[in-house]
Length: 428
Image (cartoon, rainbow, N blue to C red; front, side, top):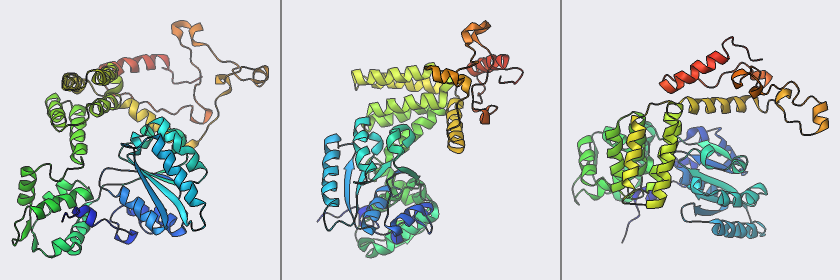
């Protein structure tokens, strides 16, 4: 008989058995409060693999006695979404309906705009409670109307004490492991390879158990863990978990300006069958996030690479991917644009919808002009150098600075130009 993986055998079914994310499910946590009240609002769980996103969604459905529908953004389209919504609508009208049906969408960041649009009505009118799971920043990947209807909760990697609890639970609670002699001598390597990922820890433990001959003790120490994983590096990565580790190493190598490391990790991904469009897409993001204004051409190169990959595919696509990775690694780096928009978004969240200064407002009607919309606006092209000082920010933040240039040749020129224009510090 086939035996389910350890991670599935130990999947918790209640909050009492759930490990980690105490800021959400601990006493007073928002998700615990929703479960206790029986009123679960739509939300998106954002976090790395193996931190309990799917498990938490199932626990919520069990605890609230709600029907649980699940879709994968990788395999489902608008048709499947509408079918599930129709079934949920019929069920919610039934005389035995309890909690509102829950629709769980894994990898929701992979849904297209049209697929996400198809969810809006059902979420808005309460036909379903949407729980999405994503490893990508929702503000980049989820459409704004859907984000406005669903809160985003961030899940964190498990810390060592939580991994230790999980290890002890596996050794004492799993029927197969309870019947085997286990000696835990060292845990450092086990926790290090797990990287805060509960599923990865359990899969490594499963590998150690399966590779230990019947009748022998299962010994857990740093040497054993390292040796077994080197002998079978894919054994605990059947669902693509290592994909996240390698793309992380690839991105960090480019950010750290090491072209040789970047090409190595690129080769690892190509050899492992990674989607080349995923690699190219990550380089587009990196070009804007980590290179940015230091070399604006980097984003054009990355975007062109993405387009080329779509046209020629593999194996020839490995060459433009390598070319782009080396170019990005060798480029000067700046994250000033990335930090600037995040600082501005934080200010918008803090201060809300500040009024647009009257002189900057559009005045298409006579009434608006009578109300001084657009009055005293200075048209830059009417002035020497196509520039004139005037206030472009709301009054409440007129002196606030969001963009702090990094030190590199391109931004040094921008900084000099900026200072020349605003040298006296006034914003008229």
